Length: 81
Image 1 (cartoon, rainbow, N blue to C red):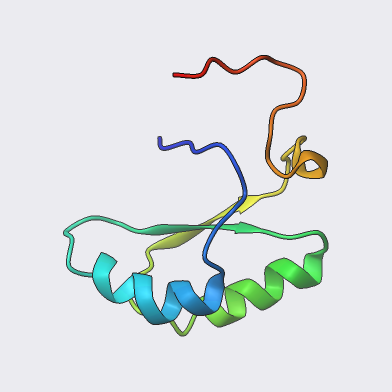
Image 2: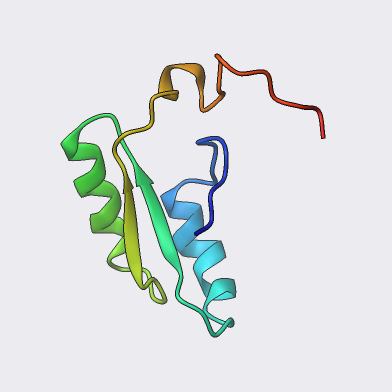
């Protein structure tokens, strides 16, 4: 399992254009994390990703409690290291 804090990313057009060609060089499954505010957001992102070669699947980020804070955990102090 790989977990990263934050929702910032390059966006689906850049992912398809610049990142997936590089990721295809590795012998591993690549799973795209999909986030949205409404069902239509998820459908549109996955529609675009379906044209990208090299993705093995999708992880739907549907239960992120800290979206209002931009992906920052606001209730717990995070150590500087």
